[in-house]
Length: 112
Length: 243
Image (cartoon, rainbow over all chains, first blue to last red):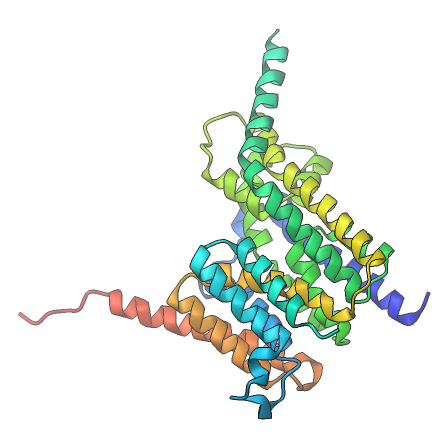
C-alpha cells in the first residue's frame, strides 16, 4: 500500500471515530452533560462557519486576484456553477433543483 | 395474543416512519450518486470510496474531507473541521436518547449509527404519546430508508465514476452539494453575516500554513454570530423609561 493510500484509510478511520462518537454520545452519557451558555451558542453557529470556510476557497480556487472584475470570473466553471446554485435555491426553495442547475452549468463550462 | 398485538403495533410504527420519510428518498438517492462520483474523481480508490460511504455514512463529513485530503491538510485540522461540521449529530443523539434508554447497547449503537437529518426531522415533528418500544420502531422506520437510498446511490455513483471517463475536476460536484447545505442553513440575516465573515477570512488565509485560514474563518464566523446575537438581545431588553 502506498503512503497516499494509507493516508486516505487513516482519514476514513478518523472520520469514523468522530462521526460515530458524535452520533452516539448522548445515547451513552447523561443528557445533563450537554453544553450550555456561551459554548452552546457558539456551537450553534460553528457548523455553518466551518462549512463556509471550507467551501469558499474551493469555489475561488481557479481564480487569480487580477481576474477581479473581468469576464474570466463568470466563465469559471466553479464560480459560475456556485452562483447559479445559490440563485436557483433562493428562487425555487429546492436544494436539489439548485444542485442540478449548478451541475449542469459546471459540466457545460468545464473545458475538455 | 397480547404479544402479537404489540408486534403488530411496532410494525405499524415502523412503516409509518418509512411512509413519512419516503418523499425524501429520490433526492437522497441522487445526492448519493453525486457524492459517489466526487469520492472517486477526487482520487479515492473504489475500495476506499466504498468503505468510506458504508462506514462513515455522513455526506457532509465525507464531502468536506475530500478537499482537505487533496490539499494534504493535517489529521488534526481534518478532525477539528469534521467535528465542527457534524455537531448536529450531538443534538440528534440528545434528542433520541430518552426513547432509547434501557435498550441493549448494540441496538443503541446501531440506532445511533443510522441517525440522519431527514429521519430526525420527522421524528421531532411526530407526537410522542406512544410507548418507547414503538418509538424505537418508528425511529428505525424514519432512518432506514435514508440509509438504503443513500448507500445505493453512492455505490452506483462510485461504480459510474470508476468506469466512465472524466477529470479529477469532477470532484467539485461534491462541493456543490456541500454548498447547497450551506445555502439551506443560511436562513437569517445573522447566518448571512456568519457565512460572509467565515468565507472572507478563509479566502484571504487560503495560503496560510497549517490550515490557519480555515481556523480564522471559523473563528470569525462564530465570533460575528455571537456578537450580532448579543446586539439583538440588547435591543430586545425593555428600556427603562423615566417617569
